[in-house]
Amino acid sequence: MVFSSLGFLFIFLPVTLMLYFLAPKRAKNAVLLALSLVFYAWGEPSYIILMIFTALFDYSAGILLGGSEGKKRKVILAFAVAVNLLLLGFFKYYPPLTDALSFLPRVDVRLPIGISFYTFQAMSYVIDVYRRDALPQRNIIGFGLYIALFPQLVAGPIVRYRDIEEQLGDRRVTLADAVAGSSIFCAGLAKKVLIGNTAGAFFAYVRDMPTDIRSASLAWVGLACYSFQIYFDFSGYSDMAIGLGRLFGFRFPQNFDYPYTAIGATDFWRRWHITLSSWFREYLYIPLGGNRRGRARTYLNLFIVWTLTGLWHGAGVNFILWGVYWFLMILADKAFAGRLLERLPRFFAHVITLTAIGFGWLIFAFDGSEASLTFSAMLGYSGNLFGSAGVASAADVYDLLRCLPLLTVAAIGSTALPIRLFYRFLGKVRPSLSETAAAVLTVVSFAVSVIFITASDYNPFLYFRF
Image (tube, rainbow, N blue to C red; front, side, top):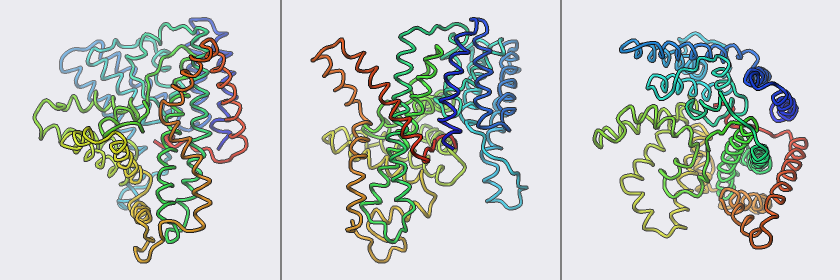
């Protein structure tokens, strides 16, 4: 598992960079597309045809939209969106549906890696062409590269076509781009490997503990570890993708903006998985009418958007409940909670927001029964709600102490404080050292991350399954 993900990337990336920069300018897109297909085929050889079909189909839909007018354009758009959604729905939702509905014929299919991400990118293209916000891409190599570009192919960020339309045709990589891209990549790798994996391992330890001996303290710490795991894992991968894109001349959009520093649900979702939130806002919420058709319609639109946001993550009931939970949190934020939090001292407002976020991850991480058992443990009760597992046992002290440094590093690392202190210190001591110090940190973080990867067999990518 380790070699098939990060291990393969460390072999694949130098070869790709060498071949890409040796290729003549006119052939760079073709070389990068071919290598991106090789990258995807390494992890999903049986589904490479599905991704190629998506690229060819939506490329053709864009060409047809460019040469049509009136009702014909609406028919083409509706057909293109329907095909994309049917493919996504079949592979992502049909197998779980057969478990719930026994009369449906079973089909043995696995979820293709990254299908939610590249399907949404493909749909954004045909919608933008339909709206005339973008011109049809007539170069099949360029469009194929947009769909299959390997840095953000399997777990985002979701890149809208018009954001990189010009870059597909003409881009340059300067020395500054190479340095910045390498730094961003190594920072993301360190976030994912050093903090995300470590937090995930402790969460797995708490999760697998018998519920009747899981104390309230460990349950809360386990939830905190999962909260940090999903942030550092996903934002780390996004940073790696953004950094790799920079090495090839692409400027991918930011996907996270220190979400755990948010105050209120609305602020959190302005900072978490920004590209998914903006996709749903632009291609669903606003077309539904947004907040322009009265309060009742606004609430309905929000309910639709958040339910589908939960469903986008998976067919499990917990994902749908998670979407509904955030709909209620956003609703409360707009109705009264936002104003209430503004009146509180920032520390208390922040604690309330983090608690709400944590309960959201509790729903997200577990199905209904496991979530209720974990919640019971957080209240100090055993799984059958009789007898108390206590706030903390003597045996828990060791676990809590060994987790404390991780939680401290993760809490500080989820803010902008380390970067601000780094540059403020160097600015006072010797400003010219900042670039050198950043380069040294990049090399050191990369080396330490590689050591951790080779020494551990725990290396999940949480968002690969979405």
